[in-house]
Length: 307
Image 1 (cartoon, rainbow, N blue to C red):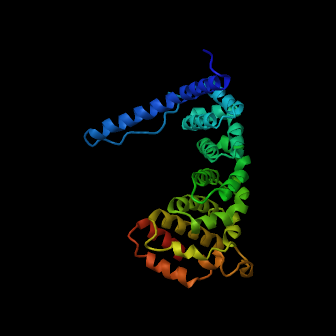
Image 2: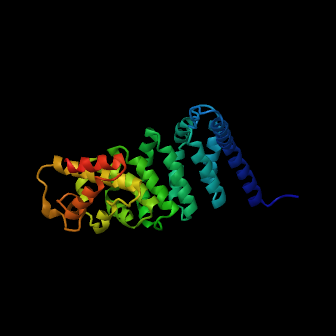
Image 3: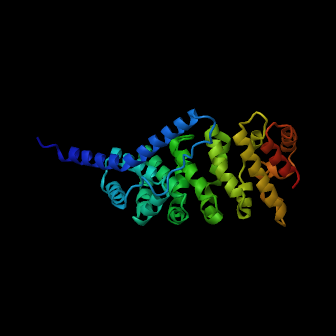
């Protein structure tokens, strides 16, 4: 009996996706087994679980077929599985170059326009893995504004929003593409006030990267975030607190290095007045944090107070 053509295409596509991803899954399983065996051994050094560079990687032909499949199909299930396989493949450094050379970055980036959240999330995850490669970043940067808009429009704390923030974290490690994120700074600061701890940690990674660039200082100081000072508290999650302090320390340093600051350009509810204008509530919280048990927290507090 002949299968209907659509079903046959799905079967063939599933076989390709599963075959392409099998190598990655086998590596994950074998790495997990190695870790388990070594953990049971007598106090040896931890196993190296970093992905191999040149072994167990997909060949060019398999990656090309996978990218062509992603272009050709409208089936969301196949699209999602193809993106997952490409994302897993991008964990290997050799595949990062191959995918770029096969125009995979632009094909994956094109999936950001898909209206299905799962597809969008998986595309962001794939681009995030690919962005570990600097040459890939040169191609991914054309999607930054679209990624920022996705972060802004996605439901608060959603997987899509977090995936977008992870990609923006990698793309903001250097200052090359900071200008493309300027219009989304108010959104980032809003997420810092309204998001869950997972969202706060991820958006702080972006904000710390941006604040390390003096050219971004005024853009970061202008938005109004009255609740920002509440993050500087002994009861706050340590990962949030350390990053919030680093963000404040970077801005304070940049302000001190800059000449001719025009105070009138900032409103009283702005980040500037909260962190940089001798704010009594902020100063009181910093004094309390000097007694925090974490050394890195105290180090960042001292860094702020001594600038």
